[in-house]
Length: 316
Ligand code: NAD
Ligand code: UDP
Image (cartoon, rainbow, N blue to C red; front, side, top):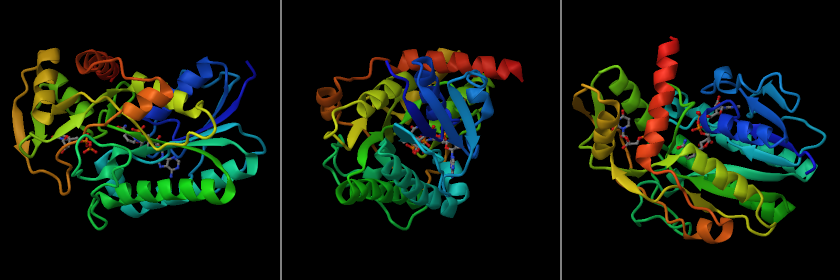
């Protein structure tokens, strides 16, 4: 197999670091671009020093020049609500200018480019489960809009570069994904609950905990993402990549308590504005076009993630 030159923006983050590991292990030449806002050098420490891996500190708000690249995975963007709301204007710039800069690079080099879009493009969905044909129910002026609308605009840019310039695009819509390499203070629900449980601190349930999410383990996502990049030229998506098994936040908390054997208590906090009530992917398209389906169920994925956080906390 000829080695490909593959650029991963956001490669030091949670998902990006797993993708860089997978591609480096395959023997591809991987260039990881990251400004380390929510990413960490620890996530890619095992790759540094390898001949086929290179880390470059770069902010995708600004153009990045390369003579040759075969594939670009565009992941740069904070994904946890507390981090993307920390500097909302920066989040929009990252999504929109980052997409323009990466699409410009793809256009110049004739690279394939995959956008890591999100189930957030469906907002607080009025259609359940969510199919790719659903246009969503998104508040354009709320506290989540910097992320949701930034990602929607990025999808629009991808489609327009495809229609207008023939850029070779792929769009995936990722549903809530969890696993090792999430930051302990990431703020997303799975890492929050595990870290709280391991410290025997209160488990913070926002709202009643009856809202639902469908949680996908990282290895399933990486497989779906790589398969999507390698589909035939004319299949561009968008395609949902997620685990359709849906859980309430309360039942997630109970699972984490059981699997950790924690003495933590559940405490109820206010529900953040515009917090979606339900979310479940319809993955019929991914099954037929990628021959893909998630194989790791929540208990198993949680056990692996709990082990990761135990090791991490023991090192401190
Ligand atoms: P993450 O925050 O761990 O990773 C994002 C990475 O992007 C970090 O390494 C961060 O430092 C980097 N980054 C942020 N702004 C940047 C900029 N301006 N220039 C360069 N690098 C920048 O989040 P994640 O969960 O790994 O998410 C990765 C991608 O997948 C994001 O685009 C996110 O929107 C998308 N996504 C994730 C999920 C999920 O459940 N994890 C769901 C849907 C979509
Ligand atoms: N959530 C919670 N406690 C936490 C963190 C999150 O109850 O400590 C809830 C949050 O309100 C939302 C769900 O868990 O309903 C998923 O939140 P997350 O930030 O992980 O992802 P997103 O809302 O973007 O799907």
